[in-house]
Length: 96
Image (tube, rainbow, N blue to C red; front, side):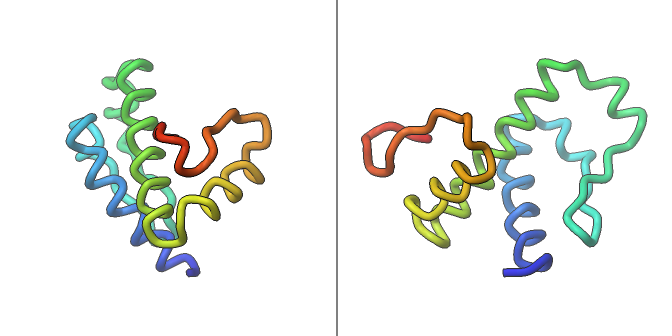
């Protein structure tokens, strides 16, 4: 998929997460997929709002990835990256 594909997925996830955390509208993506966050925004955004926005962003990113490569493979990749995270099995009826 490469950097370009990852950046595209991340950009879409960021767009979707802006509905839940409007402050994300001030965040931009660098060419390598890194976040460009204005220093004033870092000072203005509280930790609970930052956590809410980060959670929304990760959720949307994982949902998009699951759509592209399938839920089972996405789950395996997440478990490899974060081995101590408890996740539901695919198709268990609950969202991961």
